[in-house]
Structures are given as structure tokens and as C-alpha cells.
Amino acid sequence: MPLKQQKSIGFFISNTANLLNNTINKELYPYQIAIEQRAILEIIKSKEVIKQSDLGNILAKDKTTISRTLKTLENKNYIIKEKIDRKTFIIKLSSLGEEVLKKTKNIVDNFRKKILEEFDKEDISNLYKYLEKINKVVKERKD
Image 1 (cartoon, rainbow, N blue to C red):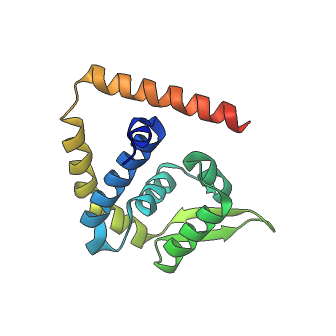
Image 2 (image 1 turned 120 degrees about the vertical axis):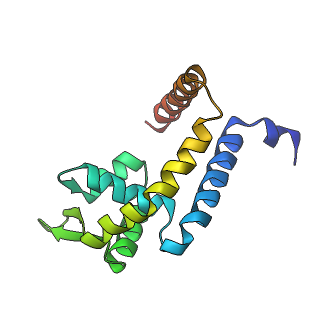
């Protein structure tokens, strides 16, 4: 790997995110749900009412990606999409979606706990602070 790539913060963050996702996805595989799909179910559960467009904003994902993921979740009967006008859908968690969240909760909780055990409170606080700074820089460049 070229030295420049190794030193790139973006590359390192992306590589770490991929490693995290691939590892947890292997553990979730028996439940036929990926971590990003599960994250969407968690968000839907935490909101009383959520629009498809709100999910895109929360996850910083484009409309096409959100639409495709929601279609997959709908096909698995994990969510219910209700059309409220020509372009707007409200997304709700189905009972099957609730069930898969419950069945996979310990896997996700244990995975998160295992990672957090490697850090003290100050490390975690600093990590969030640094990531927020990076997010700010990226968002300013987008605008």
C-alpha cells in the first residue's frame, strides 16, 4: 500500500468503517439483516413518525440508496411504508421488524461493548470530538 494512502485520514476512517461493518454483518448473517438495515430499523423504532427523506438526512445517504434499502426491508416485511402524498412516505416498523431487532439486540450490544472496553471515557469523548471536526470540514466543503 502506498505510504500516502496509509497516512490518509479518510482512507483510515473508511477502512475502519468497512472492518466494523464486515465483522458485525458476519454475526448478523443468520438473521438475514445487515448492520445498516438494522440501524434504519433502530431509527424508525426511536421515532414516532419518520419520513423516508428524514432517514436520508439522518444517515447522510442519497435518496436512491435509502429507497433501495427501504425496498429491501419492505420485501422482508420489516417495515411498512405509508404514502401520505405523491412524493412522501411515512415509514413504520412492522411486528417482524420489531422481532428482528429483539433477536439481534444482544449481538449488537455485545459488539459495541467489546469495542468500548478498549477505551476510557476521555478516549471516547476525544474520538467523538475529532469525528465531529471531520464531519464539519466535510459538510462545509459540500455546501
